[in-house]
Length: 233
Ligand code: SF4
Image (cartoon, rainbow, N blue to C red):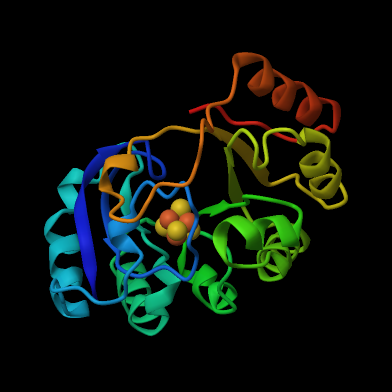
């Protein structure tokens, strides 16, 4: 598998202390991406499924407080076949698994039986606007979201809030989400930051994407009015 970064962290990429693998390659081109080095599909760190499994098994002592292994990116489902193999092996070892995905993969539903904790981005409810800023439409993301609601699957939806792109429309998000059974869904808002800006080799296109406290508060209020579960991490 192709990895561009790995390391342990606590409570940021799923429950407990986790070994987090950043898998190389992404089908989206979000203009605010904090890990632009992970977009390309060609890298030099190729690791076999067996090596990764060994590393995870050796790390078991570190998975305290309900921790385990998280796959993020890039977009982890870009390496779907090897990821599926590894996930099955991790479950045989009773290792807790989590994924952070942009939700666009038609293979996501095949991976989910082997994933204990799902974190999925939902960047815009309007497909044309999403395409304008990321290069990808949202039909598949909505489909995955709706299947997860219907099957009452746990899902943690992450919404990056970016001024001028999506932060002006809390109702648009809430009205879409509240059409479905979100009893096992939590929503998290991620206010815009520029931690990854310096890593861009192309011109960085977001101009002042920071959101105010009032904007964030409005999202909390609108989601509360629609009885959507909010998580603050
Ligand atoms: S989906 Fe995530 S990794 Fe891919 S370009 Fe967008 S922000 Fe970056």
